[in-house]
Amino acid sequence: MVESRTAYSVVAAELRRQILDGTFSPGSRLPSDGQLRETFAVGQSTIREALRTLSSEHLVRSVRGVNGGTFVTIPTVGHLGSQLEIGVTLLASADSISIENLMEIRHITEVPAVGFAASRRTDDDLERLRNSDPSLRSEESSFSSHSTFHQQIVEASHNPLLEVVTIPLFNALQNVVGDANAAANIGTTVSHDHSALFEAIVDRDSMAAMTLMRRHLDKVSAYYQNFDKR
Image 1 (tube, rainbow, N blue to C red):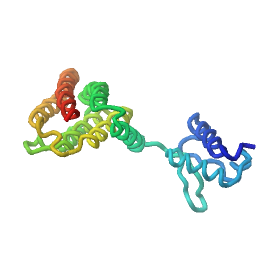
Image 2: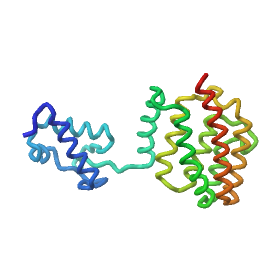
Image 3: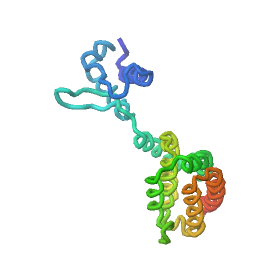
Image 4: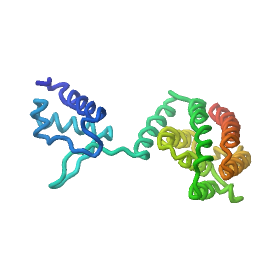
């Protein structure tokens, strides 16, 4: 029998392992509480706490009713991204990572992302890009709309993993820097760069788009590093 002091964590660890190795696939139902009690030779409270632990990690979800039970969560890009965003924002808020660190990862992910976007974009992608930043329509934009423009570029790359890794960085950066005049001093530069990026994507010119993105992020990085020191 599992020792009661660590029983729920041991049960949770074993169920977690079985979920991650595919023994229980996404969407599948876990064995009933009674079966789990018998398998692990523990009580109901231990099983309940183990499942609560897995639920807090978004690995399982409970469904009530006749056809209910505990099911393995089916992951989505948005769900995984939100988990990463929370972690990155907390690290940044605790000064465990800097704005410079965040911008370095943006360089690593967004330069190839815009190249993919230029080669893979659809007409719908272009419409979303055009609508994401008012500066593309000769209107005043904001830090939030600048971030949205970059998110739309990543989505236009049509690589879900790039979305999972990159989009939380935008949101974490926005959470750390805030909207309060964050882009005021570089608004014109950002708008000009976004227009050039948009045109390169329209023209399906991947090399030009990547060069423009690299230069753009260099400018933004320099600004944010100064902002970080204020």
